[in-house]
Image (cartoon, rainbow, N blue to C red; front, side, top):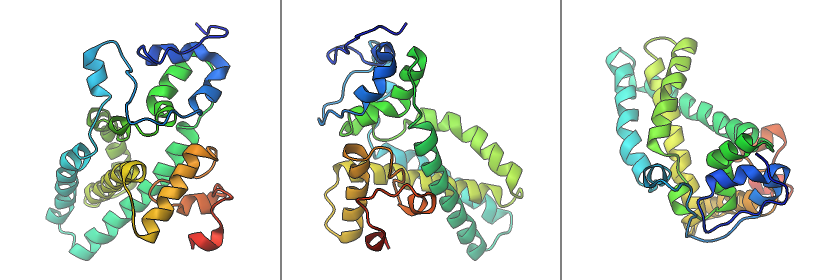
Length: 237
C-alpha cells in the first residue's frame, strides 16, 4: 500500500494519504506547516468532529472526575494530608508517563502504511501542524477509553482506599499537561518560568525533535539525558 514517490495533497483529507509515504513519512511529518488553520483528517463529518476539541473542554470534563475520585479516598477515611500526598504522587507518576509516552510511543519510527497512519493520528499530525488549536488536546472520548485500563492498573499497585486518590492525581496531572501544552503553543507568557517552558517546547518542534520530550517539566529530560543542548543545565536549575 506504500506508493513510491507519493505526494500528499493537503487539500484532501490527510489520514488515509500519509501511509502511502512509506519511509519518507518521517521526513515529511517533521517539516512543520505553521498555520492556525488545521487540515481535514477524514471525509466523514462525524469522524472529523471527533478529532477536534477546544482546550477548555478538558478541565470542564475531567476536573469533576478528579474531584469524585479524590472524594472516594476521603470517604474511606484518609486524612487531608494523606490525600494531598497521594494526589501529588499521582501527578508525579503522570509526569513520568507523559515523558515515556512522548519519547517512546509518539516518536516511534514507522514506515508501513498502517504504522504511518496510526502514528499520524497519535502525534504526527501535531508535529506537521503544531499550531492547529483544535488538535492540541486529547479528545475526551479517547481519554475515557484509556482511563479504564489505567485505573485497573492503579488498583493493582495500590491499596483499595488510596487507588482513587492516586488515580485522581494522575488524571489531574493529565489535565495540567493538556492545558499547559495548549498554552505553550498559543499563550504569550510574560514571566520567566513559562517563557522558558515555551521556548523549551518549541525547540522540540522546530529545532531538535529527538530531544526535549517533557511538556509540563524538563525534569525527566534531565534524568534520562534528553535535555536539548540549547537548554543549558545551569539555566534549567
